[in-house]
Each structure stands twice: as C-alpha cells, then as structure tokens.
Amino acid sequence: MAKVPYKTYLTEEEMPKQWYNVRADMKEQHDPMLNPGTLQPLKTEDLYPIFCEELCKQEMDTTTRYFDIPEEVLDYYRTFRPSPLIRAYHLEKALDTPAKIYFKFEGNNTSGSHKLNAAAAMAYYAKEQGLSSLTTETGAGQWGTALAMACSHFGLDLTVFMVKVSFNQKPFRKAVMETFGSKIIPSPSDTTEVGRAILAKDPNTGGSLGCAISEAIELSMKDGKCRYALGSVLNQVLLSQSIIGLESKLAMEKIDEYPDMVIGCAGGGSNLGGLMAPFMQDKLTGKANPRIIAVEPASCPSLTRGKYAYDFCDTGRITPLAKMYTLGSDFIPSANHAGGLRYHGMSPILAKLYHDGYMEAISVEQNKVFESAVMFAKKEQILPAPESAHAIYGAIQEALKCKESGEAKTILFGLTGTGYFDMNAYMQYLEGTMTDYVPSEADLQQGFDGLPNVN
Image (spheres, rainbow, N blue to C red):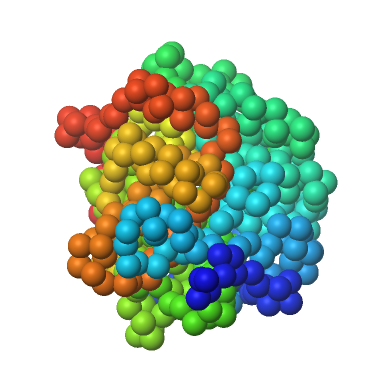
C-alpha cells in the first residue's frame, strides 16, 4: 500500500483566500517598465487605457505581500478548485527511481488548463469597473478558452486574436471559444493596422503571440468600454496564478512533504510563476532552498539563449518596454506544437529571479518532449498538453538523476493542462514525421538586431 494517497485534495474551506505577491519578498526588484513614447519609467495611470484599473495597481505593487481574493472570484474558483496534487507512482515505477514525483493537475475544467485562475480575476475586475468587453490573444488556445469562459460567466463580450498557426492546427479550440460566445480572429489579420503591416512584410507568416498581442491591444484602444487582458508575463497574472503553488504547498503539508525541486514549463511565465510562488518565498526568506527549474522549447529559448534587455512585449511595439530575457519582439518562432510557449520574452519577475541565480532553465527539442508525454500518458492515464510535457520531461530527467545517485528526492511539477486538442501533434510524433527546429545563431541575431537601444 502507498504511504500517501495517489491524490491529495484540499477542502473548499482550506482553499487559499489570498493571492501571494512574490515581489514583496524579492531582494531586488526588476527594472521598471518603460513608457513606449517617453522611455521613462511607467506610472500606474499610464496603464489605465490598456488594463483594468485594479489590475494596473496590482501590476505596480512591490510591497503588498497578500491580496484578498474577491468573494465573487472565490465563488467561481469553487467550480473547479481546489485542484488535486497527485503522486505519480506508476511513472516512478517505470523509471525505477527512488525519487518521489508529485504533480499539480490544473486540467479539471473546460479550458483544460491553469489559465482560468487569471481569467476569472480579469473578467471580474473588468465587470466591476463597468466595462462591457475585453480583447486578448491566445497561442495554443487554453488562455483564449479560459477567458471566454470567464467572460461568459461575468457577462462580458470577448474578441480573441489566435496565433494563425494554432488557429489552423486546432479548429476545435475555436469552436469551444465560440460556444462561450467569443469572437475568434486568426492573427496576424487584416482587421488591424499592425496586422496588415505584419502581413505586408510576410504574407505567409504563421504569427506569434507578440503579433496577436499587438492586434488585441489596438482593437481595445478603439473602445472606451473595452480593455485588454494578457494571459501571462505580467505581475498581475503571476499574482492570481499563485493559488496553484499555495494549494500545492498546503496539500504537501497534509502528507508531510516538501519539494526538493519545483519544475514548470516556461513560455511567458504564468504557470511556473504560480506554481513556484510560495516555494520561492521560502527561498527568498531563507526558510528552505528548493531548486526552481524552468523548461522551455528549444525552438523558442528565451531564458537559455535570449538576452537580458529591455524589449517590447509585442511585435507591433505599442506595449510598454520590459526588462526581461528576450529573443527580440521581431522573433517569429517556428510552427512547433507547444503553442502556449511561442513567446519571444519572459516574465520580468522570472527573468530577474533567473538573472539573480534563484532559478535554473533548460531547453528541449519537441520530439523529446513528446516522448516524455507519451510515457506519462501510458503510466499516469492523463494525456498532457505539449506545454505541460516540457515540465514532464524535466521531472523525468531529474528522477533519472536520482536513480543514478540513489537519492530519494521529492519532485513537484506542474501539469498545467490536457492535450486533447493537440492530436495532430501526437499523430505526427507517433508517425515519425515530427521535426525538431532549433534556431541558429543567425536566426537569433535577427531578433536581437531589432532590440530597442535602451540603457
């Protein structure tokens, strides 16, 4: 018999009632975002035309450690939270490792991912401000689906610019978003000025999250009752995603466990930022020293091969500039299937923590990711999203190291979503037609050449 259950649940009463702001415990803050017009440090009110006002305040807050979760958001959370902490016993056995592997499963909702945590907050604050609609971007479709669900619940209209390559690969994602009443546009499109400019430069482009962000912001700026909602990267997003890590820590305390390492996939940073939050707090305050490991695609390696520099958060260069690890806002990733990780930059919080040595990062090719995904699916009976499978790969590699050393370390990783809309990718892997793309130094230099000249 297992010493601990396969699944550990919190009760609704035990679910966290506050979000945690890791910036309050950081030894040094990341450099301030810059106004794209003046290149001066951004003021809170500079963000009001783009985001909901309460989210702008959260974005700039460096001192408030905990934010109360509004009761309406908690009530919505209760439809899909708390999510389970699961011991991967069968995977451990297959790997013949002394390591204990746990994963936090965020796929128990229609969006199939963790994205609903932030979407609920953004839709709620928009409704409270008296807005009527939101715009956003989506890569693989999880964020767009989550925001479509939240906007439907809180009574808001939503327009989603979906990265064109994902739009074509995943038509059923579009259908789900439309079921919840949202309008979906493949990006880049001819519906915005920035989209038309991008298409004029490269009519056959598959798009990127940077392109879609530009289009969504442009559309939102045309309507005083509309605002833009970003699903990753920003501090406000990591704040609401911290419920993942807070629940994980409470669940592990229930079974007298604590992770030696916390592993997450990394695109813009929302899921890893959320999962690691309370464990990073322990690290920053000297209570514990877990390893925090980001796993990113080799096709879009912002942490492992990017530059730590100021850059625009979007391809159209209309967003504020952020100091982050970046491949350049002009960088267009290959049409790989880890759609949610197709972003040129990294959360300024994660970038700063990585730069200061509090985190590690590795990159991995797509075929290795899917090899890990298939193994996990067979052993744990959950088909993971390609994004999540990056974290699975990282967990497997660490478990194999434990096998070699004989150390029984405790591994926690984030299973951020399910892969049922990624069957074309799974078919390519199983048929042996999947290819790996790793950008050359020349490919990366093209993106670096476009970095703004900001000291």
